[in-house]
Structure formats: C-alpha cells, structure tokens
Amino acid sequence: MLQISSGKFFEDAEVWETEQRQRFFTNLVLTDGGAVDLPVGRLEFSALERAVEISAVDRLPKQSADGSESFHVATDGVALLSDIADVVAFTTDAVVLDSVVLGERLTRSRESTSRRRGPRLRRTFEAERALSDDCAADVAAFVGQLVALRRGPFVRAMRAIRRVVDAAVLAESDATLSYSLFVAALESLSSGTEVPVPEWESYDKRKREAVDAAVAGLPEDRVERVRAAVLQIDQLSLRRKFQAFVLGHVTSSYYRAEASEADNPIRAVDLPRALDFAYQTRSVSLHEIRDLAPELWNMSGAADTTIMKDRWVLTLEGLNRLSRHVIRAFVDRAPTGVDIDHDWQGDLPGIMQVKMSPELWLHGYGSFGAADGPFLFGHTVQMFVAALSGDGKVTDMSAPLERIEELLPQLAKAEQRVPFIATYVLWHRLTGPALHRPGSAGLIDKFETDLNRPSVPALTLGVLLGKQPPWTTEELVAVLDARDIDLRRARVSLELPRRIDAAFRVLLAARHINSGERELATSLMDDAVLLDPGNHSLIEVEVQILKGKVVPINLSGYIYEGKLTVDDERNEVD
Figure 1 (spheres, rainbow, N blue to C red):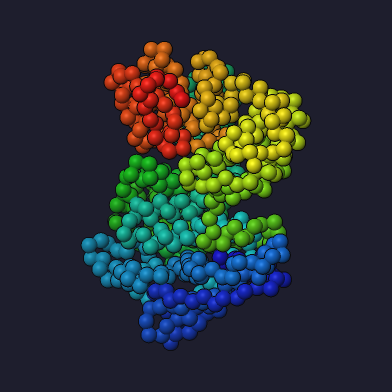
Figure 2 (tube, rainbow, N blue to C red):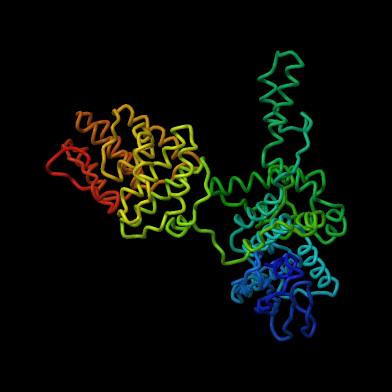
C-alpha cells in the first residue's frame, strides 16, 4: 500500500483521501519528541514514552479504470501503516512494532543477558536508539526511493524488507527461524541472476574429485567437455544464484564505513564460502528441522562472524547487517517509473480472487470458440449437479445454447463437437419444455450420434441421465484411463464434480462384479473412495465388496445426494 497510497498510479485522477493513524512501540527516540516527515506519511515521536504515531493519507481514485464510480473509498490502513513501520525499522535497524508487550520484552532483553555472552543482534534491541537528523533524512530518502521504483522491484524489495524485520524480531526467541528468514529475504531477490561460470579448480573439492575420478582415462577434450557441462549445470542451482546475487550487490561501503562500526566484520575473500554455508544451513534447518548451531548466535555475541569447521561464517548479526546492505543496494539499482499496464487494484489489501459459481456467469457466456467445449460442458455439469443437490440454481443458458447452434455445424471433427452437443443434450434432458430452444430436436438428432463414441463427456452425460454407456468394458476402461491422465495434469482440461469421477469407477466396478472379477471391482472402489474421500456410503460399499459379498450397486441418488444406495433387486448400475 505504500506505493499505491502515494498516488503514483493515478496522479491526474480525482481521489478519496482518508487519513490513517496508528501508534507503534519503538526504541527510537527524538529529543523532546518531534516529528519526521516522509514522502508518504509522518512520524510523530512521544516525549514521554517509547512510542511513535505513524500517520499517512490513504489515497484511492474515485473512478475505476472503465470510468465507473469506484466502490473502494479506503482501506483499513493496516497495510499502509505497517509498510511504513517496517521500512523505518529496516532502515534504522531498530524496533517498530504494533505490540507494546513484544517491543518491551525485546528491548528489556538487553538487561538480562547474564546467561549468554551478549545480545544476538548488536544494536537492534537497545533500550533507546537516538534518531539523528541524518538518520531521519536517510529514512525519508529511502521511502522516496522505494515509492519511485517500478512495481515489480518495489514488491520484491518490500517482501524482502518485511522478512528482514521479521527475522530481527525473532532473533531473541527463535534463532533458527531468524537465520532462515535472513537468507530467504536475500534469496527472494536473486531470481533471474546470471551466475558466472566458475573455474574448475575453484569448484567444490568433493564434487570435483568425484567427476575427475569418473573421467579418468578419457581423452583431454572429452574431459574438458564433461567438466564444462558440470559447471554449466551448477550455474542453474538456486544456491549459486543466491551467492552470485549477494556478491553482486555488496558495495565498497560494506567493507569500509559500515564495517568500521562492526565487530569482526567478514573479509571479502571469506564471503563466498560464508554465503554458501548460510544457504546450506538454511536448507538443513528447514528440510531436516535442525536447530541452528549455537556458535552462530550464543558464543559469538554481536560479532558479524565466527569460526566453524575451520572457516569464517556469518552469525545472526552478520546476516542482519549484510541483508540490510544488499537490499538497499538492490533498491539503488532497480528501475524507476510507472508501470502503465499494471493492475494496481489487484494489489489492494482485503481482495481475494475466488471461483464464481457457474450460475452467476453462464447466462452471459456466449462468445466462446471451438476449443472451449470442455470448459463450457464442465461448468454446465457443475451447475446442474449443484442445483439438483439443492445447493444452487439453474440459470438461463440462452446465450451459450445459441452459440452452440451456430458453432456445431462449423466443426468438422467429432471430438470438437462432443462437449458442445453433450452440453446441449444435458440442458434439454434436465429442463422442462418451456426452456427448450426452438428447433432443438433437429439439432440433437443431427449430432447426437457423436455421443455414441467413447468419451468422457458422453460418459458424464450417461451417468447424469442414468443411462448405461453402449460401450464394451475395454472401451470404458480406455475412457477412464484417459480421464485419470487428465486428472493428474497440472491443469485439468475438463473440470467435473468429484462425485462424477467417483461414479465412473463405481460404474466400471459394477461391471466387474457382474462378471465375477472381484479383485478388479475392489481396486476400482478404492479409486472411487480416493476421488470422493470421506463418503460413508461409498466406503460401506467398498467394505462389503472386500468381505466377498455380492453388493448390488445402484448410483441413484449418489450424484445429487452423495449417497451410494444398494439396490436389493438387481446387481447393476441404474
């Protein structure tokens, strides 16, 4: 919200302006109180207690991009003021929290360090931190820099800033998570970093020796090609990107002015190995749930570095100082300007993207093409299943049905026509004559034969209408195999209610029961339960089959009520 509330994306628009205020705990102090003006917001410090009131104007345009009146007058201010608080805490390496209790506990920890050698962070939690004029000006300048960024770099920078502030707060209570967050903050900025090809002699010794042993005896040109391939693959690793990004954003001031105040700052020659160690430590702590080695926070005091396994590594304080330096270098170099095409409204707090029920939009869906058949059919099925289950209603589908009438005669391939004619037939079988389209009988007669071919839409239509598909068991198995492949894809081409997919397996299981193939039926019932987990009636039928009982299966009521009933008179699917 920091960038949006600046008005950057709608400078010439008429805006709503809402002043937002919140009081935060802080260990920053201004002599006799006072205020600091920021490009977005204002900091007013208390002269009597450790507190700062952050205020800012929440700006939103009165009109939407399409010229209509915007319903969004203001946000609750939480995101805006929290952004400012995080930026201040990040820039000053101080505490700015909305929780007074937590703030007091963190800053009091400096008074009770007798059981360890010193604080985990050098100055973050000092009881009082004087905010000099130069430091206040630096905060204001940094806020201005952030607001000026293009939207992408701004979002990435703010995400990293928040993680660094969170890591600092957690340093006293959870050193392991704190260390991981410092590393994650830097890694989040490293995507897209180009990694230089290392020299073979500088490559990891253990890996180098393993490769050299494998290529021993090969001609020298082939050895070089293998080594080059290994180094190229190594370039793609996230660890290398992390290392290259950080090293590329460490400026000379890190080893000069900033290092003059640090305790045992890291040498440039040791930093690559220290970064490698930090990344691996983060990975181990997350994937193996290992605690951070106490040498990195308990024995080192507030020093930037310590010795572990005969090499210099970064402590919590070392990562804290490095993270703030690198992120500021990233902001210094990031492109500025306005992203004209960016949909900033999607970034407003309190907005979620949810899938709308088909009944809310199908009535206006009339401009689809030949490739949209599965999408239309799947959502039509969802609408009818919800309506007949009592969880929704059927909407007017005149527009999509009219479009189907136009499109069907133009499609040469049966597989393209199938989902459209299935949609058309489904509507005219489950609705009354008053809702039928003029001339629908003729269109159905012309194209309904497409549904005789084995396909998932044709099978779905049969299940919904209580009709057995006119296919052999082998053809039905092939359809379900194809459906299983589709369900395992990252994006399913045909979205169907879960009970439909489970019903497919129950239908095939019934055929195997009738033919005496109980093992196959049992396996299919297992698949059905996995597709509709927790359905008691489905589980009960599965149990009966496992016991060797001949269970007459009837799908009536399952699709619309979720209950797989038993037919006492016949052993077949209704």
